[in-house]
Length: 520
Image (cartoon, rainbow, N blue to C red; front, side, top):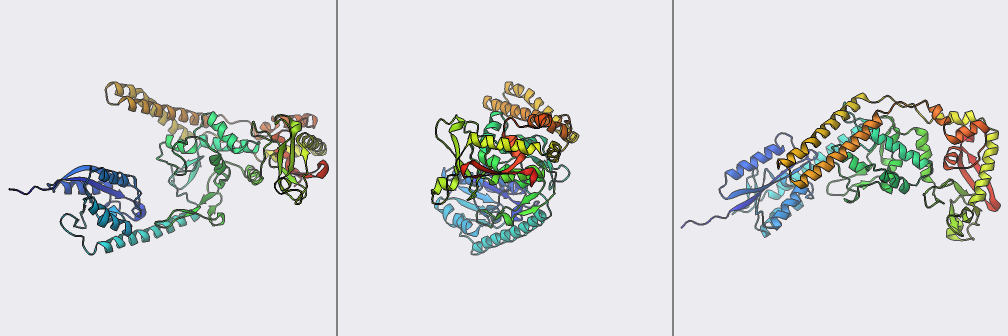
């Protein structure tokens, strides 16, 4: 009577990572897959259950999507044999590799086969050299990792962009993937964020405004453009603009044309650690700026201020971030003594006094209405003695004439938009022919509609006609036009305060000292 042989349900595991120094030809996904399939065909007791492929995943840890899926199938009893090309495909961490081979698999009755290492756990113990091979694999990965990081750092110092995905507002140059060029649509959103912030909008308010207009957040925008991007810091359910997203954009020096890289350091088997700002690699003027230098510096100055916004309904305040105690230098905070919507009920107090008491500083209290009137009168007097043309000339330097549309990018977008529209037209036919399920039809239809909307907006942004000269735009601003006509300021708003004032020092008895931008 023949002895019955155990049959094995095989998981073929395949992995490739250039970061580990894997050779593209001999270790390619296709080569590994063929080797494993040929090996299974040669074994009468093995049948393939599934292939598990981790393309672009390092072997120095086991938190790989397909590897984890394979473990789940092992736990569910669907797989009882694992076959790999060689040990380095399985993993390069000798400690965890040893745990899987010597404990995890044996405890679950899982057979392990490494083809080129001639390892088969069925009926034989592992070679004594197995731990040494694992150590060698890890040491090799460690050495390659150091060389790759050194090479990347050299590129970073040369101003080459080495990221997998271009930052929001830019795209990789078609001529050189290490260079960045502006993405007209996203760059327009970035400019708007800076403009809104400088006009007094809070970061949360800006995020809400963008969400309300249906402008997709950076991570979704990259996905709509066909990139396999995933933000590991974002919750899966967060597909919208947030305070932190706006905050990062406002602080990103990349938008003034400087390449900023090397913000984190990482060693094998350790989490990435943030570096001090002084240790970042910053190379100036490597690409076209989206934000001009004056706007950038004004924004950074505003970010440093401890902003307190009096108008909580709109998250705007004409003096937000400009008020300082004349004695201790701490920012003033707002307090209301009556109904919040009444201006006379709104007063500002020294932050030190509010937090620590009178023994450290006095109230320096001033009402919003009194403050506004004093500043308006003082500004009016200043303007009476200042040539408006000097102010306008300074503001004109912050504006640049728009460029002609990028014909190459316009052509690319039109071609892609046409392709998506054709795909949309064939969807229903595929559905009727039962080539697509109802769920797939709905999913594809929604995805194509979103892409079509986004690309239409991008084209509109690219094809905008050049506007008038910067001087004409500035002179059309209502308060500037009023200033030119009658050299007076009837009412204050955030634009006037931001453009004219650097800081307001508040002293006891409603005494103020105002520092203007144009006086240095």
